Image (cartoon, rainbow, N blue to C red):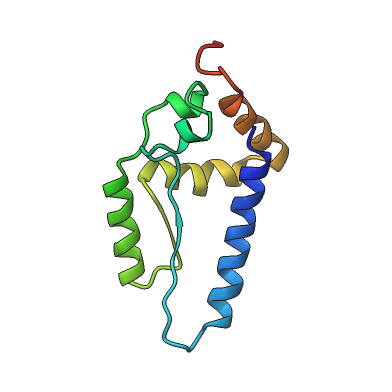
Length: 117
């Protein structure tokens, strides 16, 4: 349900840090945006509208973009798309094992999980 998506995100994070390091001193600024669930057509287009994560309240894309712009302009290494995404990324993910995170994401990404309660 999220295996390829999660692996892709891990690649992007790793790629970002490698490129950012290689460009050090070049004058190019980079900030990694980790947006969390954002109100776009992503979940509908990915066939995940009926999942728990697809049906939950999501962050406003304009607010996510504002946070990203501010972080880039002020030289931050990375930024989350919202306070909730930041809490999840900084607190929850650090407290859970990889196995537990995989199970948690499976539960919210399983097809029709929004109606299976």
